[in-house]
Amino acid sequence: LDGVIRASADAARAAVAQISDKAAAREVLSMLSTHDLAPWFDEYRLELLQGLRCSDHEYFDPPLAVILVVASDEDDVVTKFLSLFAMDALPALFREGVMDPNMLKHYVLLHDNHLGAEAAERAEDTLRQMRETLGVACCSLIRVNSAP
Image (tube, rainbow, N blue to C red; front, top):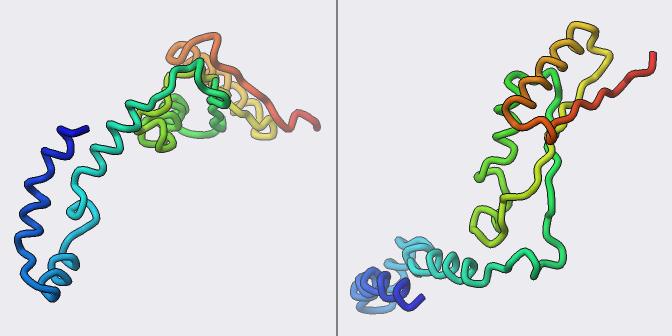
């Protein structure tokens, strides 16, 4: 962590060197973003959070698994599933490395039976494609609206 702060000290010194009086201080502060004022903070926070990262056995309430659901009438269902659990779609604690995103995943294809027989056949084909790509044991098809 000392290295992170030392690496950004030069940038901070350059900003401070421009300040000669109170008016200059206001002007410099108005031109700088939060990152400019503390350029070390983002790296420091990441290093700190990764250093504090807990092991699986230290969590009391970690997510153990995730259930991802996509409607059967969507285009390119497999891509939709992958985008639902893409790193940029995850909460900040996962993106920052504090929590491990490698957890059990179950993919559910949700099909509305009122869409007709042709749509049901497409749903079965999509389920086969999901199982080939994502794994047989972690893919399911749930049918809703089965009453006449």
